[in-house]
Every structure is written in C-alpha cells, then in structure tokens.
Image 1 (cartoon, rainbow, N blue to C red):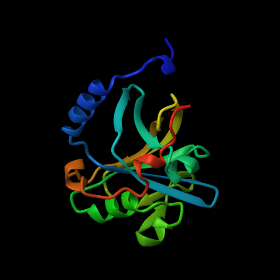
Image 2: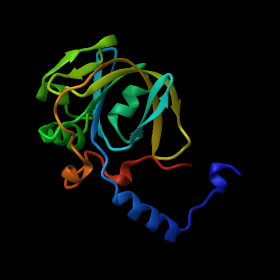
Image 3: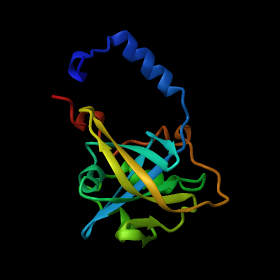
Length: 178
C-alpha cells in the first residue's frame, strides 16, 4: 500500500488531533544558513531518534522559509528554549523569514559552517544533516547528528506556554500532497 492509498477517516483524524493536543512538548528554534541567507523557525515536532550514534529528528513545515534554506544546508542549530525565552518563540514562530530578518532582532553568533547560533540560549546543539525524508505531507523530517552541544541551567519553554502565538504562516499555506 502506498502513502496515497492510505486514507485516514475524519473521526480518527479528530481523535488523533485531540490526543496530540494533550501533549506538552518543549519548544525549539532551528536555525541554518546557506551562503549568505540565514533562516530560523520555531518547531514543535522533534525527538531524539538514535543513541549510537546519537541522532535527532526535526520536522520542518514546507511553508517556512527555513525549509527552503534548509534544503540547501548541511548544518543546523537546535536551540531548546528556556522559560525566559518567550520573546524568541514569538520572533521565530510569529514572523516569517520571507519578509523579516529575524536575526537583526536577536543576538546570535556564527557557529560551525556559518550556522546562526542564538547567543542567549544555553541548551542547544549543532548538528549535520544525515537524512531528509519527504513522505509527501506538509512537513519534512530532517535527521541530524550532533557535532557540538551545550547544556545550561535554564528550564525549558513548553508548548502550553506558547499555545496562544499566531504562526507566521497559516495551516492553509502548507503544501499539500499531490
């Protein structure tokens, strides 16, 4: 059975969405660069996906500027926002890089391969892409292997704390499977 042959009925979709709405994931900002173009976005879909070697999966919306820049990038920084970083969640989740230079509005430094690293976020890692999976849905899975990491004392910023943010791109702007 192919992906196109798999159809989820509306009742299952509603129940699944309700179940997912009960989760409270930590919020991350993913940043990357390709040439002179920088990009970053707030991400709620992410998880560790390997132990040996360590790997991490991040799902990027195809509607985002970060997805388009990231398709040309090999190195990404993953920043685990702290409880005092709501302003970064608003910046990277509520504005679009299509028409805003988010990095002009925050402190950052050049990391490996020129990837922007947010200076005030202590809990972070920089990883190199080992795979990119596009199964045709509205997000792609980016698998990263860490090349640098740091851990701070700050607690994490959770989805429930930013659920009121208005996204820079609406759900309708996401690319749909053909």
